Length: 126
Image (cartoon, rainbow, N blue to C red; front, side, top):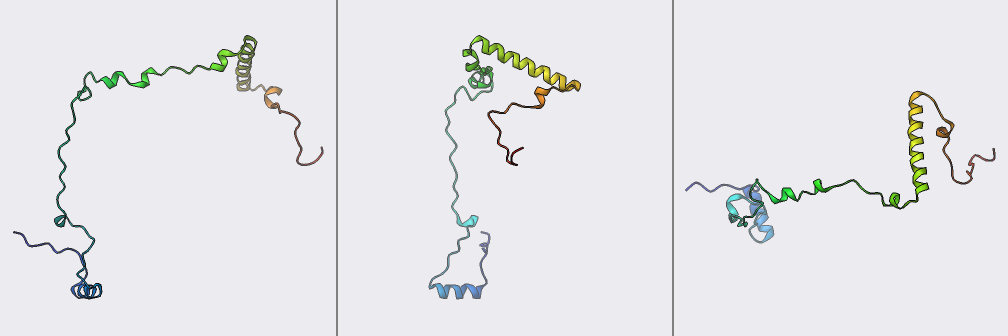
């Protein structure tokens, strides 16, 4: 049988002084492998199922990423026709404005954005 392993602790004199002041022998809080009982876990007993095999795994067919579709704008569907036409015209104008900006032409509409209501001047009257 191999010799017993010396665990970490203070020097012998200090350990006796410590025990005297404690009034008992000190048990260190350190845990060492030879002082702890082994905790072996039993093998898991998992029932076999269709997910055990790699081929024909039913989770592959239920993958939700393949079921995604583009979103439907419900408000756009409920708008009356003139509003839809104005929205498409505004989108076309925005595309034309961006094309003109790319070509170097500037438009007054694009420079000045509309502001709702009156604007308060913080610097005072102009």
